[in-house]
Amino acid sequence: MRVNYSKSIFQIASNVNPSKTGKGVEVSLKSAYGSKGIYYTFNGDVPSLQSKEYENPISITESGTLKAAYFDKTIQKGVVMEQPFFITQSTGKTITLVTEPHPSYAIGGKFTLVDGVRGSMQKYSRDWLGFLGNDLNATIDLGNSTAASKVTIDVLYNDGSWIHYPKSIEVLTSNDGVNFKSVKTATNVEIVNQKGIVVLSFPKENVKFVKVIAQKLDKIPVGFPGEGSSPWLFVDEIMIE
Image 1 (cartoon, rainbow, N blue to C red):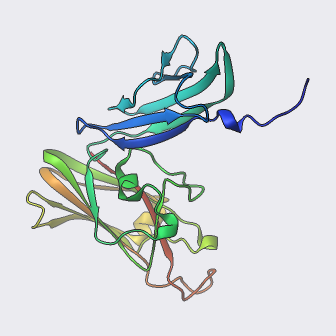
Image 2: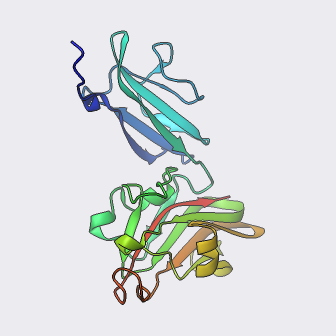
Image 3: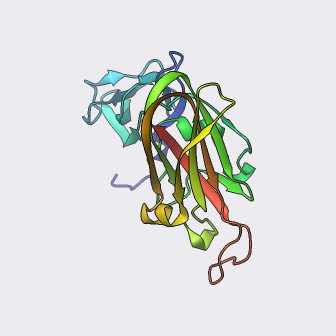
C-alpha cells in the first residue's frame, strides 16, 4: 500500500552478561516477539536465513561485530542490529567501585566498564557511567596473575552538558588486592590530546589486580557553562592488555 510505517517493533535488543566460563561475555538477544526468528553472524556477513539462528546466549571471546536481524518466516523485518565488541583481559572480569555512579547515569552498573562495549564519543548513551562530585576508583580482578602492559579507558567531554575530562587518570597494580603500586599516570593535558581515548602504557608485568583512578576536576573552569559548579565525569570501557 506504499505506507511508510515504523519498523522499530522489529528491533533487536541485546543484553550483555559475564561469561560463565570466566572468559569474555555472553550476549542475549530478543525482539518484541521474543527470541524466535532471530538470525545472527559474527564474521562480518549480513544476517540471512542461512546464518545461525539464535537459541541460547552467544559467547563472545574475541573482538568483532555481532550482527542480528529478525525474520518473519522468509522475510527480514526491521534493520540489522550491529554491536561491536572489544575483548581484552579485563572483559567480563569482576570489578569493584569505591563510589557508585549517579543513579541517573548508572544503567548496567559497574559491569558496564568491562562488558566489551564502548560508548559513543559523540553522546552519553547507556554505555557510559556518570559520576557527579566523585572520582572513579575501580579495581578489576583478573582472576589469575596475568601479563599486562597497557590500560585503555574512555572518558567523555561535552562542556555544554557540564561533562569534563578528569584532572588525571592513574593506573595501579597489585598481586594481593591490598598493596598497590602506581605504574602510570595521565595528566589532563594528555587526556585532552588523546581526545578521551586514554592509553596508559607501562613496563610489562604479571598482575592479578588493576586499579584505575580517574580524578574529577574540582570545578568547571571560568568561561564554560556551569562555571564554578562540580562537573560530571563520564567513563566507560576499561581495557587491559
